[in-house]
Length: 217
Image (cartoon, rainbow, N blue to C red; front, side, top):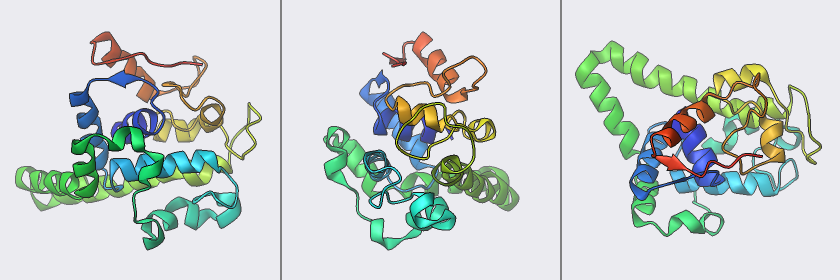
């Protein structure tokens, strides 16, 4: 989940903090282990979503296309198999990221094999297949449920909402209305009671000098 929230989303899609090239690849690798396609594919499509949020051009708006499509249908559709390189030119310049984006099945495959070799068949089921499916549906609730259930603090021109329960499931992504209002911030929980585990980890990494320049509202 951290690879998706702090990596694919806050770093690659929104550039909400800075890091070195090595840890940049580490973030991309961790996120790619989630089996949600390539890092450039993911971040590029997410940028497109923000440009056209809840309009006819939004590829996963629940208000325009329905719950099932916004939750999982769009990512399974062959219609969006291609990486939108025009939307992710800043990171597409790195050959290692283009390689990882092309061979995005490699990290989850290696993870699955390692889990099987160390924990056997039951470990493979629980530690890879079950956990990956749970991660998918936790992540996808932000596309579907967080545009339907919750409260809107800010007028953003879309249906994004803040939802405490989704924030717990997704390490802070549930403060979605906050995010749509200030898209490039490293934190999505703006007040002390808005739990944002991804941001707390990023603060710890910043204290260690691994990341820096965490952007806040």
